[in-house]
Image (tube, rainbow, N blue to C red; front, side, top):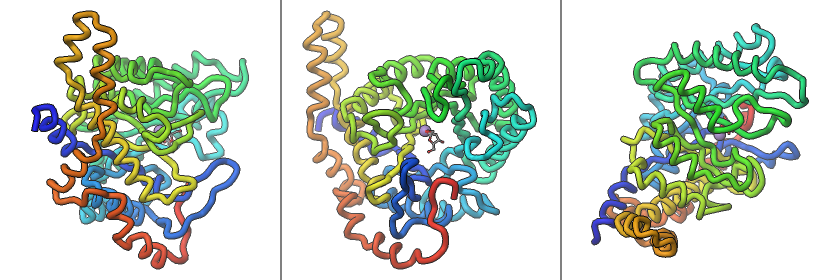
Length: 389
Ligand code: PSV
Ligand code: MN
C-alpha cells in the first residue's frame, strides 16, 4: 500500500459527517409535502434514525438539532439518549424565521422588541448547548427586505452586530458560533448576511469564537466555492459546511448528486491543508431535504458521496502537483488533479469499511437490516415530524 493510500485511509477512518435531524422528517417545497411512512415523531426518533446512518457508515456520529423543531423538556435526557445510541449532539441550529413576529426580520428587525425576542431565542440555544454538550451554535438569519427603501440596509447591519455581540458574550469557553450566509430567499431584494464576506467581517469583529459556515447551496450559480474555502481556511475562520447539492438555487439535494466534481474541488482544498479529520475543528454537516426519496437511505448515500469525494481528494499527489505548479506546467498540474478525481475509490472505501468491521456496502446493508419495515410498522399515530414540528 502506498503512503498516499495509507494516509487516505487514516483520514477517512476519522472523518465525521454530521447529519441534520430535519433530514429525517417530512419535507417538500412550498407547493407540496409528500408524506412518507415511518417518519419520526419526535427528536428521539430522529436521533434513532441518525444512529442507523452511523451504524452502517461508521462516519456519522453526530446529529444536529434545530430549535424549536426539536424542542423537548429535558435536553440532558435527549443527549443521554443520543449517547445510548452511540451518537453525540452536534450543532444547535437556531430558528428565527418561522414566527409571525419575524415578518420584517429578526435580529435586524426595526422593532427592538422583536430583536429582543430573537436574541432571547439565540441565548436559549446556548442554554441547550450547555445541556447537550454541543459546542457549536449555528446561526442563519432569514433577515432582509423585498423592496428598495423598505428599511435601512446600514442600520440593519448595526442591529445585527449588536445582537451577535450579546450572544457571543454568552458563549462558554469551549463553545463557538457559526454564522451562515445565503444569497437570497426568503428575501428577494437584499439579505442581511448574503455572502461569505459579510459573515467573515462580522466574525472578525466578534472574535476567534465566531466562524463562517458555508452552505454549498447558498451562492449565485457559478460561484467558485473552493476559493471561499481556501480563503477562510487561510484566515482560520472556516467553521464548517452545510453540505447539499443544487441545480438551481437552494435545492437541498443530496451532496455530490448534482456536481460531484465541485465537491471534489472543495475537498481538495481541505486535504491540502490537512483539515478533514476531527482535529481540524471544521464541522462537516449535511443540510438536506429528501422530498421524494426515502430519508435514511438518502442520508447514507450522502455520507458515501462525501466519503468518495474525500477519498479522491486524499489521493491527489501533492508532491507531483507542486512540482508541476512550480514548473508552470499547466496541463501537468491539471492532470494530477484529474487523475485523482477519475480514480474509482469505491473499492478502497469498501476495504476500509471491512477493516473497521463494517459492511462494505452501507446502503445495501441498511436495506437488508429490516429497520425501514420496523419503523413503518411501529410509528403509527402521532404527528410525523416536518418543518415546524
Ligand atoms: C437556510 O436555508 C438553511 O440552510 C439554514 O441552515 C437553516 O437552518 C436550514 O436551512 C433549515 O433547513
Ligand atoms: Mn444551511
